[in-house]
Amino acid sequence: MSSPPGRRARLWSPGAGRSSAAREALRRRLLGLIEGNRVMIFSKSYCPHSTRVKELFSSLGVACNILELDQIDDGANVQEVLSEITNQRTVPNIFVNKVHMGGCDRTFQAHQSGLLQKLLQEDSAYDYDLIVIGGGSGGLACAQEAAILGKKVMVLDFVVPSPQGTSWGLGGTCVNVGCIPKKLMHQAALLGQALRDARKFGWEYSQQVKHTWETMTEAIQNHIGSLNWGYRLSLREKAVAYVNSYGEFVEHHKIKATNRKGQETCYTAAKFVLATGQRPRYLEIQGDKEYCITSDDLFSLPYCPGKTLVVGASYVALECAGFLAGIGLDVTIMVRSILLRGFDQEMAEKVGSYMEQHGVKFLRKFVPVLVQQLEKGSPGKLKVVAKSTEGPETIEEIYNTVLLAIGRDSCTRKIGLEKIGVKINEKNGKIPVNDVEQTNVPYVYAVGDILEGKLELTPVAIQAGKLLARRLFAGCLEKCDYVNVPTTVFTPLEYGCCGLSEEKAIEMYKKENLEVYHTLFWPLEWTVAGRDNNTCYAKIICNKLDNYRVIGFHVLGPNAGEVTQGFAAAMKCGLTKQLLDDTIGIHPTCGEVFTTLEITKSSGLDITQKGC
Image (tube, rainbow, N blue to C red; front, side, top):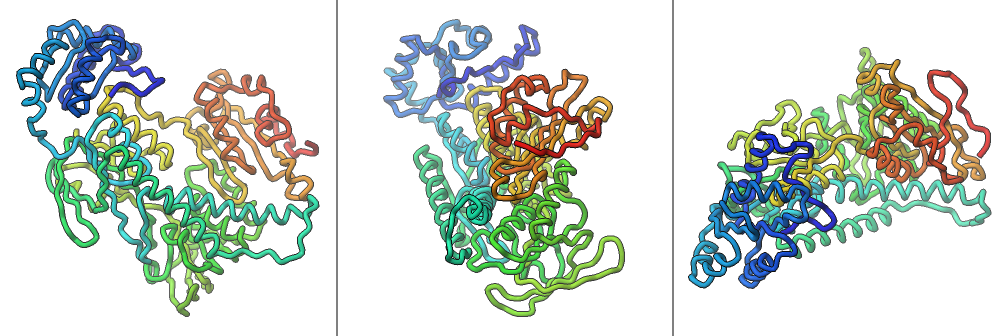
């Protein structure tokens, strides 16, 4: 396959020049393409002889990997190194099962003599070019991209049921028990707020408005089911083999797949990608797995959870507590230490403060030590005993549902990695990789949430998976950029951010080298509705030593995700405070506040707003 349309591939590292080291790196990459593909054609898109060869292999039904030298930035260098390898200076330059066929004429001669067919019929050493373990966002992106590039690919995906018996279809956490149902339930809560606002805008309705949990979950699960089917259809269209079995390495290049009936089948592959993701962590106390639920269970829960205790202070905990409270439930969050660890702590506390002002109760510095069932039911009644983290004090309370959101564990310990020598971090199960997502075992790669020191975000996994496939099978060099990745916490008042937290910025650049611009703001939509003035907040962190470049972007307000996405692109382009000042805002919007920021934290001036 040629490079994706609109992209110019590069085999020669930017700025490498003609150094011997760069030349050797290019040589190794070309040899990798030759050795890693059944048919490798080095071509030029306008060459009639190249076209004839492509048509020949197409007529034989043989998938080829094609590198168009006129469509990559370093085509001349590639052709020069190829001539050293093959003693052939022209294109097409063709390899079949690592054997150099030569050019157009020699390939057609080999076809007429039967040699080409013999070379093509030589059995591959493995069943597949690539096996991906895990059918989530990153795994599916990698598998489909590899298939587009002409590779024989298999995806193994198996969901081990939660302790409450919940399982789901193809697509991973995001689609089934993460981003998608979370955002839809968040939307359900926002619609409740919109109904309350509507009266102020002249909408009159007399009937009592109530929320029905079962109607919401049925609609959301129907949507998720359509996405599951879409993923399966997409794999089928790209000829990716999908096997609903649990994958476990048994030896090098060989994996055992066990289905729900316990039937085992073994498969081999030249390369493997681990994309197994994570699952919610439990407290390891009496009653947790028996009576508590996690985000694995919440979104398909067949009954309204009622009075709910959410244990944890992660974004999952705050998001779930937020939408449960938003649909009218009695919600308490039990927090061991700080909110939103790893995020900007000023923003985290503002998120918590808003939730508290709108009915969510917080129990700070407590951890559960016992969960006891008092009554069965849908929901039942649970007694929770909790202990202070700062002393001997204990408290107890009765809830209908206890939702655990205390973190997630990587699914890497029971897939046979020890049998092939793949190293993991024994503490958290994360997999260390190099800058091309390669593990310590050369033919095994990993993407997504299981990577050590990388962001646990769906779009990151998708990007990493696609780029990995292109590096492995299309000769590309582009790596996933894990810097300045935007994200949003979908709490009742959304929090969007990109770049560094204020704490991290101070740690990296020192406080005296930073300038923080900030303001409170009042969305126009909130004014008539009589909602909180001076609650929404915007902040940027600038590096004074680098032309006041924006290294941290933070917004707390409605539609924060939509606002953040646009500014994230600007940050990728090197956004500075001056560029923000030069940008004319769209009035009246929330995003425009970033074009008029004047007050610095260091000035100590008042940031409350009094007009539009």
